[in-house]
Length: 121
Length: 110
Image (tube, rainbow over all chains, first blue to last red; front, side, top):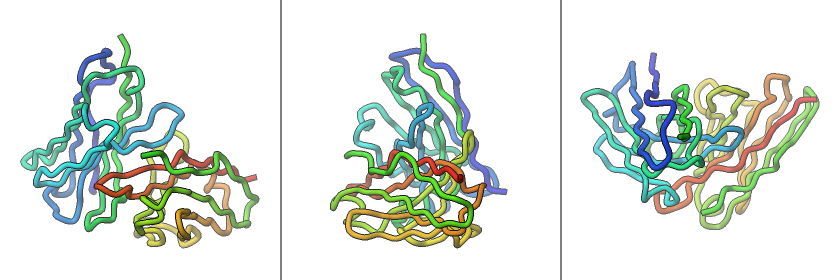
């Protein structure tokens, strides 16, 4: 069964860098029909797209986060990762990884369960 | 880029139909047929309901339908059921390889 699973620290200090990994099981992250994305949701608030990556390494980022974000892919491990730097309390959120339908669809048909990240000293 | 505009809340009785609007601009919703809709129950993961304005992913009920007119996209839920009570988010391609979500609409089934 195809599944995405996020992993990483639940608590990070302000000004530090958050590193999260998403592991795909039951499928290939090198499937050319899909991109892979990170989306976050602050507590009680709406969804925010962070960025997307193709298996080849091509990335697209939310302009509002672009200066602080890096997304990478490791096809050998079926993983893709998020790094978000210069953290503040405003980055406290549930972070989801998701599969993005390719071919220019820009929609997400498979989601991980999410991991809650709290930015606090 | 600004978030797409959705009503904060809508409500309806079982069996009725409701429509949730999602207003963007001529640079996003109005310029691309790339609007998607997601349903999120409390504490749960978002679920794709509609993509590319009006297409259904496999397994999604056809009680959910999408449309677009100008800069506004809409999600219509027909035959409202208690289990439809949830938060609904629209999402649109914003051009230049970017994506924008709406602020979300809470649907209450009376």
